[in-house]
Length: 298
Image (cartoon, rainbow, N blue to C red; front, side):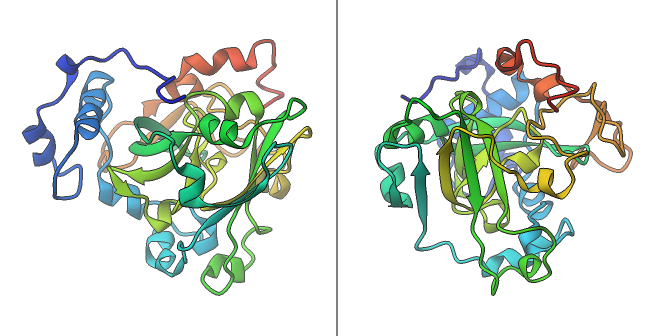
């Protein structure tokens, strides 16, 4: 069931199409109703989407290098077709699914989300994607499942970061099942109504907007339902600095820097830092963590 997440905007909030295009926020070409709606969301929420150039040229994707420009320079080597995803573990219909077959019949939605990196920089990104809950329901979640584990593709011949062993690859991530099933959690297949770029996690990636960006694993080839908390790459690399939950929290600093403020990419050299919002400005997820000490479960 799509469109479970609703905002409080109306067509009166929409930015005129001409004004939006004149700011060159999207590639030249036509813009559908969904994209116009994103423009309205941007203005009404006080959010201005980052440009396509910013979104696609300033990335962390360590399989292609550790520099922010490395993914844009190196990710063209990523082979994205054909693409399949293995669904296994505690699911009713496990198997290796061709991506088109897995997504067939599911609704692609436009989502304008804040994106907050653990490194204390941020963007606003207009994603196109499918609610993860719809994909999981399609394959059937068994009653004992409590967590969802994800795995990124490994193509050593095409990924210079894998060759250099920057991390212990394949990159792996995980969510609690209720986080995965939340309407805000999507599997993104596009940006600005364009197919998602290689450096952004083509052909499909996770987007969990209330968590630090490294939780939103890219170029996914495996999803596993399990009853145990799965390992995650940065937690394995440094558990003290990167917990399993990794919710955006201005009150819990990274051991090496403050998380109270952030730098907006594209804001200019003299732009002031802005306050970081709890759960990155998505208070509707707070009930997921009721009764938990978020300084312990960070």
